[in-house]
Image: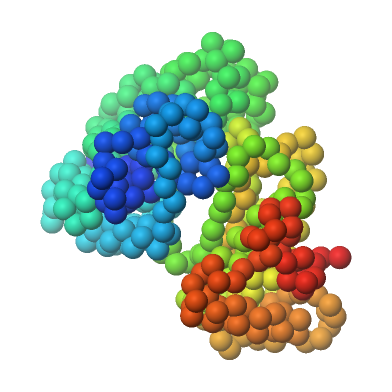
Length: 413
């Protein structure tokens, strides 16, 4: 919170980002119900949303809700290009930019007032610049806490701005429906509604012991604090290049290990290729898993040495996934994501001494052999296109894992 009490934190969020980029690439689709995605909806235009189409929905269900839905599959490079241009605009106003994802960020503008004016003025300048330079719509919210700034940007959508004035925060917050709170998904919302809690103000006034009876003591205290706008976090400047990742939503509720191996294989291949293209390697592998009720968890492991090997990514991510399935034996997954952080230059990498014979870890002899295979695959894709070669699971279906597609190279057993 700024010392002068101003709402110095902005949350900037591109509206329907993936769909908006596709509309720029295909102007003939403007005004039509459009969804971006493959098996599930990644993003949808507001015309499609008005018909009940939402993110993470299966394409089949989206088509049933919106019979005239137009489904397109975007180019990830286009999304990155537009995102980079938007983040350049952010950094023209303040160096204190904290990326949240490819299409949103927090900005601390406490030191920008003497150059650009009030936070409300800065929010409008950002929106104008982004619209002029990229053609994309963006919503900006501002407050004295990150939590409330993010809520303000959501309320401002689509294509608007809203700054919550000091002294009005609690009144503004308590009037909103409780599903505006981060962490309140469909299951939690149903439980809160059963307690007669529909507004954030209701939750703020409810005894934490009552909340804990439905969601556990930790989550009860957390949501109760948010309901009173208690959020001490500051904006932490960073770069999206501090990690490299990919994820895939596949809908449903899956626990079948062979199916999940196919998903992990493709994600590992994509992340490994991106690392090698950047000339980077990493030590920490993080798995993101989402359940059907949209609750997400992360699990990570830090290796002894850095690696950019798709095989190492796959092996570690598979171990982490097995751990999640064991930890939650009654729940299935609807999304998996892999990211690599703690990045360093890819060469030279320290070699492991042969003390862990058979281990597939960064710097091990086995990993170095597989790096040669990675390099050959990268070269083929560079010459003939990304689809020229890939995991066998891409050809044989999700139930045929990457390990089998590479003739056992990546099998765990």
